[in-house]
Length: 379
Image (cartoon, rainbow, N blue to C red; front, top):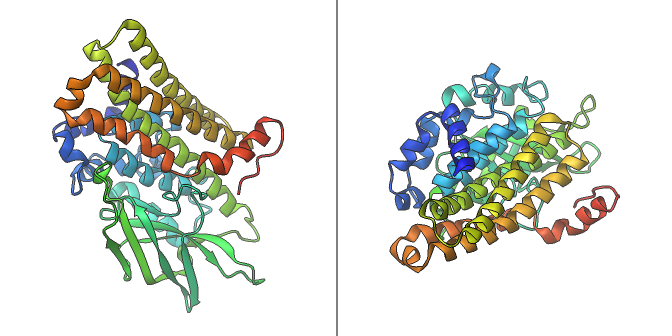
């Protein structure tokens, strides 16, 4: 399948040997809890994909990143989900600030270590709650001398076992008494951070999506980013960048899952040529939409239109992937379904895209108003 071959070639360019290493593990083992796929991702420089070259990274652009994520998703849906959490976290902090000028000294020091030390970053925001903004704060913070004590939990939290760094969103007490949003970046081995079983589904079992709890975790004041008098848009810009990158990358990862099913149908010549054409067109449409959005992000300034376009892409692709997976399963036939669990697994693994925020219902009014000519106002 040409588009999947292209994605694999880009993945090989940035992470030589990763796809072969994944293929060296039986599919079922890649997807179960305790899988080695995240270790392979780390060993093949996965952490560095979106890190600027000046910081030792691969400096991939959005289009390259989408293709890498599609290749990974096609070979391990679990790793596609887990890698998205790392990459969107890196992009949130670096996409608009590759020179680290808008981060605190403490955060900048940690970010300089990501590529050289192959550190993996997990996200403690709200990506697991469909009805919420992905960057809603999920923790509380109490002021103490030198910083804050943070409490709360994130579930599910992909990379829960393998993470080296954790980003969290909190509402800090403002000087005027009004809470203000802030983001903290802290080492994952900080005292008070614990992991607990949460993920019970066999689908995406290798993503390490368990619960992470923070109990009275001390976070130095210097590890928080928030708006300041001389940079009042700092936090809003980080939120917007994070939202766009999350939607783009998670959509690309699930597109890879559907591509794997489509490739099986084309390779085996299943169904009539009309059936195969219908399937291929749906899958390729999803790929073109995602890559088109990546080009827009690469070539233009982030704006309301970029945010709206990202959402339109995500929801349109979401529908196309479900349709593609259903048709692919039908064309592969009952013996393929009976003879190997991979067909059923891949068909199921397409569906969780709908569970990532935001939901269609929570954004419907904002998108309709924007498309009709009004401003984009999202809760």
